[in-house]
Image (cartoon, rainbow, N blue to C red):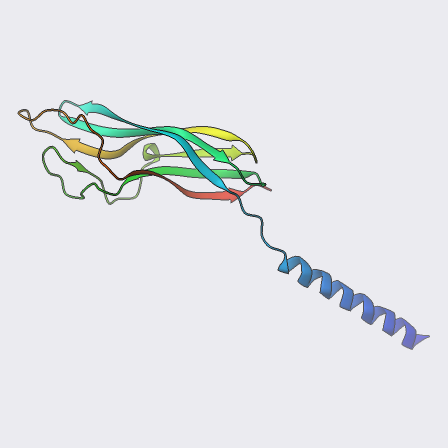
Length: 148
């Protein structure tokens, strides 16, 4: 009788271990986010200082809900040096107004985003205001979490 109980207990422990390993081996869920309908605009911030602002729509085309989606923008063709009449960027970490955070985005849903200061341009009194956007403007999804 004791041998049979030990055998059943051994089988139970093996099944429990197999279930634990199977649970760990399952692929983690992934979200699929895409940025759509992006719009960049030039705005006069101060008398001779212009900035580029961004807005658009982010879509969750995946099968899981996400939360705390952080979105920001970059200008890959802009300089890091401040030159008169040229677009430039800061190498510092993005400030809260330079990114947007979507708190909850369900699967199949979409949300609007908007933030300021993707790039900067300073002009002296003799130069004209910038009328064209620089090349290399892009929106980046920096991070997100899978909603439980």
